[in-house]
Length: 92
Image (cartoon, rainbow, N blue to C red; front, side, top):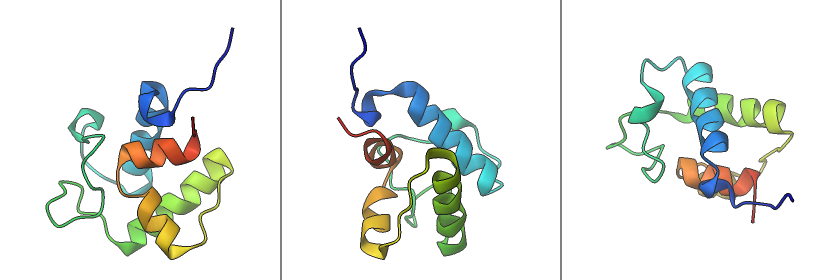
């Protein structure tokens, strides 16, 4: 029996997203150091991502999952955290 799981509850999906971010933004960080709830684009974030990284991530998400995010407000909402990304890719 198969059922849809909200993305933020899917550890494998969140790991894929983290790996995608690390690979596409050339980050030197362990996946385990990326908090699922922490803001990805924030001065206090340990990722230090910028607008170029956001563009690279959105292209990678589109290429990997077939999901295009074209609206800047939606992009900010989706890219808030790993959990928000996962929920957007795999809604409940």
